[in-house]
Amino acid sequence: MTGSTERPKRVTDDDRIPPELVVVTIGAVLVGIVLRFVARTPLWLDEALSVNVAALPIADIPEALRHDGHPPLYYFLLHGWMEWVGTSDIAVRALSGLLSVATLPLAWLAARRRGGRTLALITVAVLALAPFALRYATETRMYALVMLLVFAGYLLVDDVVRRGRGGYLRLVGITIVTALLLYSHYWAIWLLGAVVMVVGWRALRSSDRSEKRGARTVLIAIAVGGLLFVPWVPSLLYQSTHTGTPWATAQRPASILAVTLADFGGGDFRDAEFMGTVLALLFVLGLFGRAIARDRIQLELRTEGQFRYESLVVLLTMVLGSIVAYASSSAYASRYTAVLFPMFILVIAGGVSRFLDRWVRLGVLGVVLALSLVGAYYGATASRTQADQIAAAVSTSARPGDLVIYCPDQLGPAGERAMRSDLDQVVFPDFTSPTRVDWVDYAERNQNASAQDFAMAAASRAGPEQGVFLVWSGDYRGVEDQCERVLEALTATRGGGQVLVAEDGDEHFEHAQLVWFPAET
Image (cartoon, rainbow, N blue to C red):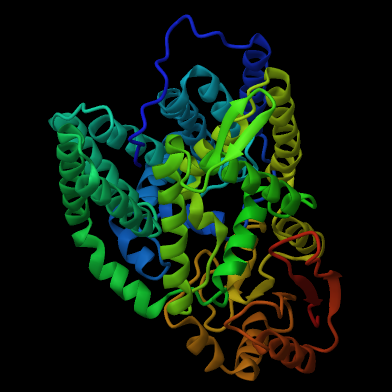
C-alpha cells in the first residue's frame, strides 16, 4: 500500500513491447482464469466452517465469529453470495475465484506505474499463475478478498503520496480500504503498521512538499480507517483471550520464513521449496539489482529505488507479524501473508525485469511460469480432506439413524457436509452439531471431558439397533489422546470395530480413520 519516491520512466504508447511477452502473458492469464474455477475437491475444515458461519442469519454471524476467531467482512459477503448463487462447492468457491480475477487488472495498473507496460505484463503473468494466489482463488476463504483490497489500497496511497493526486475521494478511499482490510483479516494490523512506518518516514525525510503533505494526509486517512474498526475491538480482545490458535504451536521466525517461501512456491507440491528459492532470488534482484548492460546486473546494498518501499513494507509486515506471533505463542499459517503478497509479486516481477536481454528475460519468466503452473494445478486440484472417502464408506454400510461421531470436532464441518443427511451426527466431547467448531477455551474443554463417559453415552444414544461410526484422528493438537480413549471405550462397549477407511496423512492435510461398530441386532 505504498509507492516509491523514485519516478519510473515515462510510459508512452510508443514503448516497444516484445510481442512474445504479450502472447505469454495472455496465455498465462487465460490458463490462470480457468484454474481459478476448476477445483472439484470437497470443502475442507476451514472452507466448510466459512460456509456454515455465513449461512447463519446475518445478525448471528458476529456472535458465531467470537467463537471462531476471525473478523466478519468476508462472512457477510459470502452470506449474500450464497443467497444469490447457492451453497454448492462450486458456487461458494466461485466468489474467491471472481475476487482473484478482479485483482489482475489492479496488478496491471500498479506495475504499469512502477515500470511501464513491460513490467505490467510480467506482473500479471506471474500473478495469474502464482500457486499461492491460485490456492486461495479456489478456497472459500477471505484471502483472495485481502489481496484485492491490498492492491486497491496500494494504488490509492501511490496516487496521494508519489503522484501528488490528493483530493477527498482518494483519502476517503484509503480510509474505507483500511477499515475493510481490518474487518477481513487480523494480519492487516501488521501490514498497516508497516505502511504507517514507511509513509511516516517519507513524511519526515522527503524534501518534496507535495509528497510530505500527501504522506501526512495518508496517515490521517489510515488512522480514521482504524477508528472505524473500534466497534469490533471487543470481539477481537475476546478472541485473543479465549480462542487464539489452539490448532498449532508457535514457530520461530526463521521457520516462518521457510514455510512462507515454500507455500509461495506451491505448498505441498514436491518442488515447492525450489520454487520458493527462485522467488526469493528474484525478490533480491528486484530490491538490490540494477541492470547496467544486456549481460550484467549489479547488486547495490543501498537498494534499487524502484521497489524500495514496497520491499520495506513486505519485510516489516513479516517481521512484525512473526515477532508478535512468536512472543504471544500464537500459531502462524502462511496464508496470513496474503496481506503482503501483492507487493511481493511486484518486487518479483521487478526481479524478472532486471534481465534486459528480451530472450533471457523471457526464458527466466518462462521458468517461473512453468514451475508455477505445476504447483498451481496441484494446489487447485489436490484434495485436502478425506471427508468424501469417509462419507462414501459410511453411505455403503449405514442405515438411517446410525450414529456418526467426529473426534476431534475439527473433522466435523467437512465430514457433515459430505455425509448423508439421514444420519445422527455429533462431535466429541459434548454431542453438539458438527457444523461448527467452538474454539473458546478449546484445549481445556477437551481435556476436562471424560472419554469413557462420552463413549457410554454414545452407545446408549445409538442403542443396539443402530450402528456407530467413529471418524477420528490422534494428530490434532488440543485433544491429545482423548480420541484414542473414545475408540478404546467404544470397543469395550460395542465390541471390536471394523476399520473402513485408513488414515492417510501423506496425501491429505485433513486426515482421519473411520471405524464402524455395526448394530447389535
